[in-house]
Length: 131
Image (cartoon, rainbow, N blue to C red; front, top):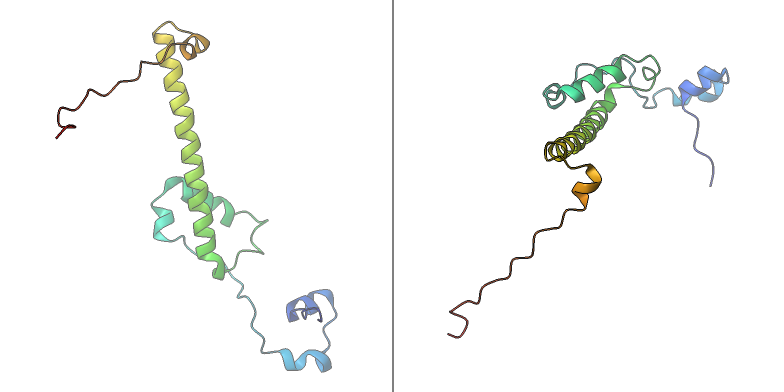
């Protein structure tokens, strides 16, 4: 099995392009270059996702990689990143809330963890079981 052929842009970039050898491949499909464009509506609705979108689109490190073809892929990435960050913020706020409650009850976090759990509720016998 042979290796896949190099794309024409790579030959031109490396200086190995030869007109007599590669002329018949001129019509090959290539990624369109240009800006990725405006974010979709689902990204604009989420503030964290929009911030991540703008960070990636305006970073010169990612400009050569981002093509208009990858708009939906980038949108999915920034939405998942936003969900991850929101989940972390929620976990931190729950932890802070528990800490505040334990300090209000004058319990240290260790003492609060040693508090006994409430007894399990036993079900009352059902009077219709015998029917």
